[in-house]
Image (cartoon, rainbow over all chains, first blue to last red):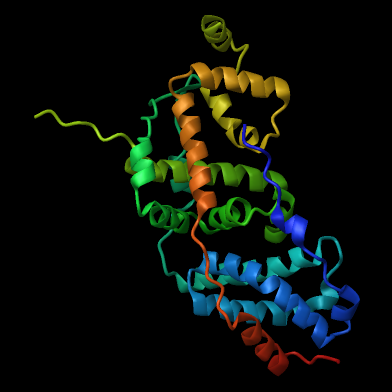
Amino acid sequence: MIEKAKSPIEESIVEPDLDALLAGDEKAFELLVNQESPRLFRIVFRIVGDEEEAKNILQETFLQAFQRIQTFRRESKFTTWLYAIGINLARGSLRKSKRMTSLDDSDVERLQPSFSKGMFVESPESWDPLRLAEQSDRHELLHRAIDNLPEDYKAIVILRDIEEHSTEEVAKMLDISGGAVRVRLHRARVALRAMLNPHFQYQRQTAE
Amino acid sequence: MKAVIIVKTLLGMAPNCKKVTSFLAEYVEGTLPEKVAKQFEQHIGMCKCCGPYFDQYRATINLIKEGQEVKIPDELVEHTMTFLRNNANFSR
């Protein structure tokens, strides 16, 4: 069994000085930008896939945090609230740019396994460990597959599996329930497995 | 032992493939109750479909976690702070 993933975010975040932030203190904001920029940039960049756009979104995120700080209701960590702003801006940017044609919910459904009387309809073919190990561009393959996921599934994979935020944090960032995070993460992984499947199966030897 | 599990599965006394695949995420997280986790492992150990499927599910997660590194631009903090100084009315 794989060990339950610990969130490095939960372990390492020092909550910022909220009183100083509420007072509009430049030094407090500078500390916040210093501490949170790398983590937030990684998430935003993974969502939008463009460095310049990610930098612009980061600027706008901190400006909105400054302008809206009085609306922070202390129901979550401040950093969770801040990340929610950045993630919303990134998802909005992705929708506006229409850079890629992504799968929709019905495609994700189609990529789930089929069962008859509770048993697999088709036996999954084994993956070839050599193809899996030697596939030099497997990260590129996976990256493209994640990019193709519907936007909410993509955000959940990035936040949970790549950046390792907890389910509860992700639920707050995306304003959905923990159950919805768990279900969509599982469906996204299953869809990704199905997309990777043709690339990693044993190659059948063709008879001469 | 294997025959007992098969009979139990057919009689609905042990989880079938559909049920077992719905447990994958929780099993990987380590949040399945102990009794269910044991049933899960028994099924995975003997099922020709769920065994490879579980391996592939886990391999997919590992690949996702390996991910691609994101290079943080050197000037990122300064870039953001310059923008804030120009657009946010800091009180002090």
